[in-house]
Length: 232
Ligand code: SF4
Image (tube, rainbow, N blue to C red):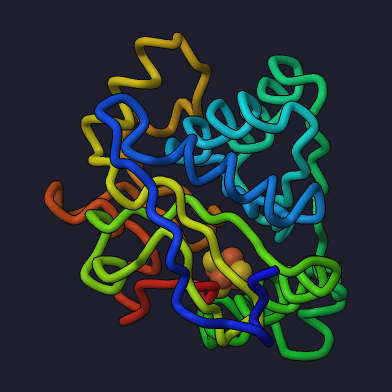
């Protein structure tokens, strides 16, 4: 089995078919290779809606982890409920940080996300994901190459030094238009904030409407010089 410890560049090739751009082929390989221990870390943004639909074609009983920081939009929690209804076989683990928001404020001071967003993301996102990934050899992520310069080099199968794991990225060849075409074609429910100027949706304290229409992540950590939560 290909793991972080046994990593070598995979020789397996996936056909980039016109419908799924290789995503379903890769997911089939992933579940055959790793079994059910593989975890999909989903933020329930629009890529997540597509990926869950693809994932459940291959593994109707997939396990999905949502990093429940405690400061998500109510629309995000409502979207999760709709996904649960549509795909009753999946398990969604609402993974919480070790510290509640009150405990975090007591230890590090109020509104840590304003003063030190990297530390806040470490506590509320990275540490919980690390714990979830400690039980398996691989995880799935909805990254697309088109999303940002920092994501443009992502491969289908990646060595993940940060979490000492293997990161599987089925959507790397999908464009923003293709994502939406799929959502509409299959009549999938999605977070309504996408229709109100939020192409990328994270915690409510750190997400605004996009300020640059050509930069889908320009509404994340606006003015803080930060573009990623640190998971990738
Ligand atoms: S996105 Fe903001 S609120 Fe959420 S964990 Fe990171 S810094 Fe904290």
